Length: 84
Image (cartoon, rainbow, N blue to C red; front, side, top):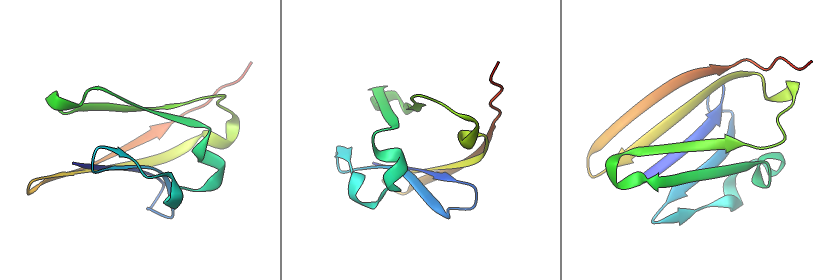
């Protein structure tokens, strides 16, 4: 299984999971220690990417891609950050 999380139009890789582990070498350096991949329920197709110490710079569109044994899916989302 491969899971990739990107900012906007795939211009910046945030996280990549492939072959049973994270591949940090290709991720944008500012996200390597800023994110956590949650995969406790990966066998059921459920994963999440937790962004730690969130700031207004994290606001915006994101894209995720999932690939596994011929199945692929792309999801789009927008994160809105409102700090008090």
